[in-house]
Structure formats: structure tokens, C-alpha cells
Length: 144
Image 1 (cartoon, rainbow, N blue to C red):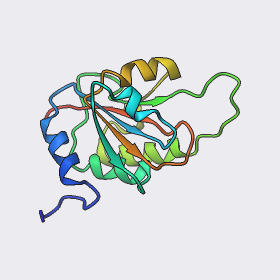
Image 2 (cartoon, rainbow, N blue to C red; image 1 turned 60 degrees about the horizontal axis):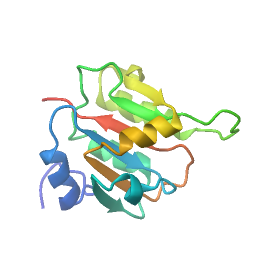
Image 3 (cartoon, one colour; image 1 turned 30 degrees about the vertical axis):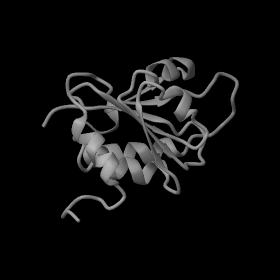
Image 4 (tube, rainbow, N blue to C red; image 1 turned 90 degrees about the vertical axis):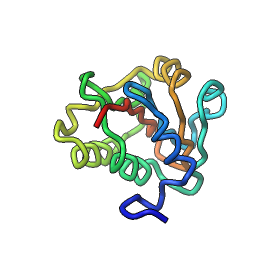
């Protein structure tokens, strides 16, 4: 056991977060995201039974966001014509604002298929059981 480390961060996930370097990206994937097929060149970590918000909040306690890019946090845009609501994005904004002084100005949006292409180059993908739609979030690591 370690002090001041969120218990939701498994030893495997902590190891991956430590291995990541500046500008490496991490995807926190919702339950519908094709984590295994997108993560063929990445480390895929299962976080079954956990939601994306609790994973995001715990990671941001130990993970610095990149200060050399305008949007180190990116969400998957809703497809044109899709009428899905995305209230989880408001929760993400609160979590990010609590962890980074730049607040929700750090959050960008990437078109769905471009998000998939960028996810294929991520260092790691965390597959959660998040049921919300369009709940995928990509983080870019900064320096301490």
C-alpha cells in the first residue's frame, strides 16, 4: 500500500502512468469504445466496474497535463445528426478544473473518426464500464 495514491489506480495503471513521458497520450474509454482494436499498438488496461469520471479524477491527482499544447484534454465530438446529450462533459470540466489551474479551457473536441485515429497512437487505453455515450477522453501528459 502507498499513501496518498487513489485506491482506484491499480499497480498496473500506476506503472503505465509512470512510464509515460511528456506528450504521451492516454485514452479513458467508455464501455462502447473499441479499446482492444484501437489499442493494438498500445497498452490496454481494463478498469471494469469503474466509470470514466472516477478514473479521470484519480488519474489527474498524479498525472500532469501538458502545458505546451492548448488542449491537453480532448473529447470525442458528437456525430452530426446524433441527438445524444453529453452531461458527462460537464462532469469532466469540473474534474479538470479542480486539477489544472487553466480549467476547462484545456478541453478540446475531436471529430469521432479522427479521435479513433489518434487513439491508435496513444501510449495506453483504459477500458472502463462507463455507460454514458461520447464519454471518451484523451489526456496528453505534461511535465512536473
